[in-house]
Image (tube, rainbow, N blue to C red; front, side):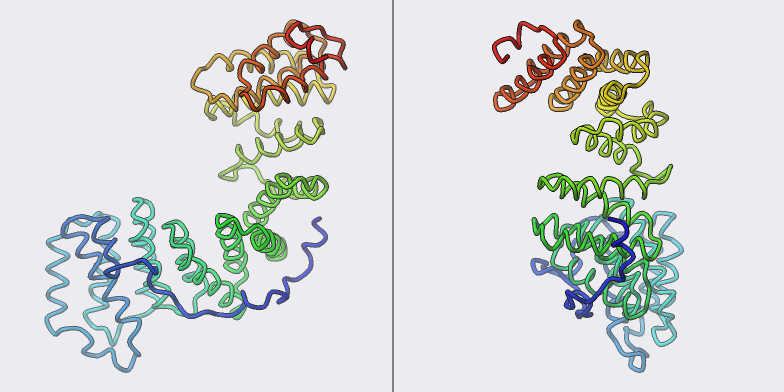
Length: 407
């Protein structure tokens, strides 16, 4: 699996490497950037809207024609708007700098303009003002039309704002600019974002192709989080489509790309453990569960339940210490009493506990797990779950009255 990652990304699908023209508005957008006004009320909204529109106009105007671009009284008006608006402290410096730059448009520095816009976009994203974040990220990309990082940010913010058409254009542009400028980090990140976009659009074939490209780029150019994210997505897609061998390969790739302290470590480790257990390789789940153990106290109750039940099943299936299995099972049985945990999570935990207690020859615990699982199973799940547990009972020579009819 990973050996293939050493191959350099090719132009087999040549179109994505083209550099499309910019797309400055969504097809359904009315008055340009009106959402900026809606996301920030009062004078601040007006200030943000006017500023981003002025930056876009400045960026679209050739350098030799920027002198006298704005009204002679424009500088005074900008100062007045800055004074009148209640500006968050984080925005004071970038908005003040933009006002100064636009007051002398023929002298404005594109790098400084773009940096200020990027700062505003980051603030807006943190404030969940997604349209404002997109507007300012795009303004930065227009100020620096050859910058792959700026194009990538615009595509990512467009995707977060639900504007898929604009996101795809900017992400494809980021890919093309990255290749042309040999900027490999934004190249890898843009491929991953494109794959996510296409997966959301249910375009499985193209998303799989782009995830593979992103994985190879992440491997080749040392962008570890891209490599890990692409491998994790490919694990999800291949296991979901029943490609067992491919899924195993991607599970190994995820494990090799894991590093302690990554933001999504707990979710990733839970996914890995669940995959190996579902694949019948309980022993392979043990390393992921061991890595997860120090983080469990900080997890929500549902994840703690899943972790404890899988730990009991994995350790029991791998012939681990009986005391560790009992402790994990006891913790899981306790957490099963929490009514806030969703039924599907409880059901998986109960089935895991049935496997763990059966492997330990714990007839009482097995019966308890069986009763819980059958109670939680939906109408459509009941027959399958009952047969799985009955088969387990036959294999381990355990008698449970509820399962006798399925024997």
